[in-house]
Length: 433
Image (cartoon, rainbow, N blue to C red; front, side, top):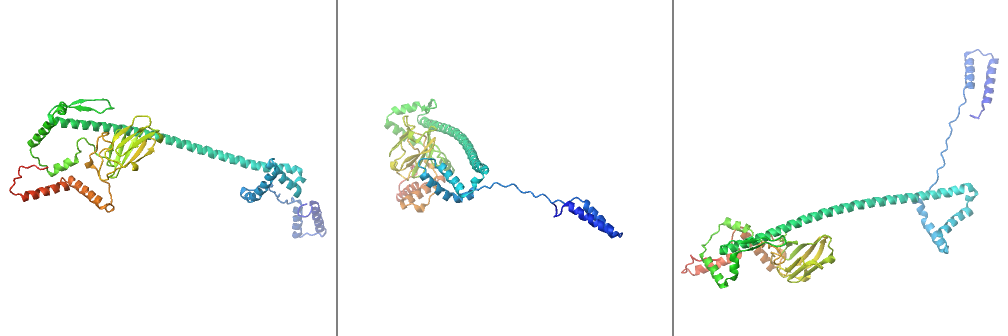
């Protein structure tokens, strides 16, 4: 059936109409055209409607965001079932409860052929979610492990580079310390040569020892009479002609390091074989080098008022000796800075003194005249400390300009007043120091 009329019935209707037209013997063109249209309608294929496609039934799923709304109710049911399980598996009881509900209150079991597939589909859906979650967790774990491995490799490379850098720095520092020690010995030898006019003898030792220099005159001087030595020094001093330094010469002398000293570093400290150090007027900071990988339990450090002993437990001390000045032991401590450096923080007892070494005889001293005091607010200091700091700053500026310090100026003023008070005395051939 199409359009409410069968093809056979339509054909009969068309045939009847055509017969009527013929009976009336219609010859007009309109009648002929009408007959032709009827014939065309009869022979034309019947029109069919497009087939309606019904989409397949989509399997209904419950998203977690929706299912979570029922979690409080389900948890309450599960807790009650677990309390009644009496040693049995609570999950079995939960499934029995659910399927018993379907049996009692629904027609789920009326169609046995659809029950089992429905249950399996639900199980498989949840199983796929679990598998996907495991896969994602595994991928995240693998990704995390790869990142950690890459980070560990980078850390190991940086540590190797840092160890190599420290080794180069330590070797360069030891070399500088040995060179400074040699220069100090040479300077002492020159001074001894200037005293007795003899040629020094230099004996080179291995790298672990410091080169020693000895002069024949120095050996003789050891056995000489102290009183005769003082007399010789006095006679030599009397024979020396008076010298007068110009302003430029005084500046050049000030720029030169004192014999047997080293220039202070940026922190107003210096270098030794096993450490570098910096200082302020109140504290000394020492960075000790220890073998790479040393732990804090292996450190042996003893700091008393006048003495320092530092090293590793069960081994000879790396540094041992007397402080340059007294310290406050209760305010001194050490910290494991990294796996190869230990930091010693030392509190000076006197806060108005620059140290030239940390431990006496352990390294070449620095020239404290080259120390640059740290910037500070003078208004924060007490009156006595402020006046002392201002005096030090004034004397330092005077020395840089080749002019007398405040103490030297005070002595010169006293001598000037004495000379004015005694005009009858002749001071033309006097030498003042």
